[in-house]
Length: 271
Length: 271
DNA sequence: ATGCAGTCTCGAGTAGCTGGAGAGTCAAGA
DNA sequence: TCTTGACTCTCCAGCTACTCGAGACTGCAT
Image 1 (cartoon, rainbow over the protein chains, first blue to last red):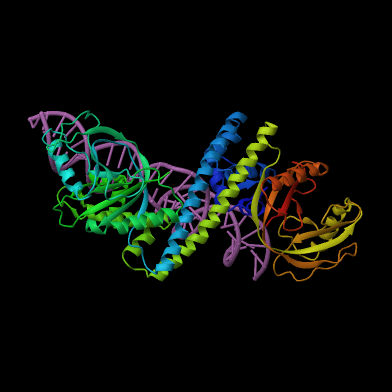
Image 2: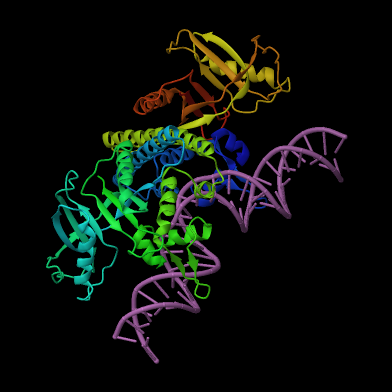
């Protein structure tokens, strides 16, 4: 019979943890003095304690360990749980490694530039959207502005309120300013199934854009400096070993008359 | 000006998190209606929010991010912090991978045996000890018992109380029952600098055993079945790709007359 | 006027402990 | 027998970065 401190030395587990396990009923002391409340342990409890530690080390929660120790779980169930943990952990490892890679690339960046980067690029889950869109091959990207106005000019009178800021999708595999395959999308309610032609005679397509993970960057300032943002996001993707998995999007988050100037969000879907 | 829900859609950050950042002062809304308490945001806050998310993704705490955003930290300090995080994270990644390997080896084990393993093996930090020890080359391991008794026979009368259970250290690079280089160690107080010779005329060495990480296993049952435990720990070390980094120890945790039978702890230092 | 979706604050919960406060206990020395 | 000091007890708070729920209020559309 050892008091908790001695037992703690023997098993090399902190006293506080032993008390915690005792309270949870995971490792009840062999006896508790009813007057003093002192917990008394025996060396014979070491195998059980080691089982607890071993199972904990496998990533199981104390709750789950309790079930296992009380034989509430069959071997098959334990196997299933472990397989689940395994999948979960390999995902976690991959995620951790990616995060470490991001830290390293960031370090390299600030050590070469010796200051904070101009843009912050973040991975986000962009969820699925139902959109009304106009797709055209343009020989002049200036036209995008008038196409947007044209689109709103059709949707608003028809009572179709966009549910979010409109954005363009650049379908070209490589940038070609003389024949740019551009889609302008207006997010609309899920129930919208058709839209009238625009004042300029364009025809809407209604489609779903699936959700995806995307590298997202916010560009604040005049649109004609946005190429810097493309450079930054390209470098970032390369540094983080991510591959582009779809056409990039540019969302126009501000109204044309916003006092803080135009704000554009770049989204590159990644695998 | 957007209400929190709309802004949440734009930035793809949950409302609860935005409120949390607002309470922490990390991303205060541009205005708060004094009567309703409604928070109002603007698109121009997206860059700051993305900075928060990017820094968070680098493993910084919200506290640290707050300092950075308020310019309380120089670029050099940020670099230092990131380097620290980097070291910490690569350690964490390695640890996670090792844990994943343990899960996988455990899965393989229970899938081949189709039941729970007999022993639970755990990595523990064994801390440094000051010991009085007897080292000898024995041609018969049975003698260990009498050596232990001999040791106690010298220490107790001299008023040197062992501070923990005694243990043997097997110094042989490979097991040799005809000439086993065995050290029997009695943990004693740090102040002990010498001990008298034993009744049988053996001479104590007083030394420090450095702390180390060790694979630990508890064997409950008669000593002559302990070879199973050695097999188990050997398999475990192999499955977890750990290398032995010192002579193994066997600690005798029970008194000879303990009703629960002998309990032995095996410790293999690992790198 | 009435819904109803959105928002507010506040408090609790998460996992696995760790640390502290304040009180009681045990064994040895004076 | 008393004291001292090490140990132990219970209970509560804190850690991180939120999330969830209760109960009350607001804003907008019918």
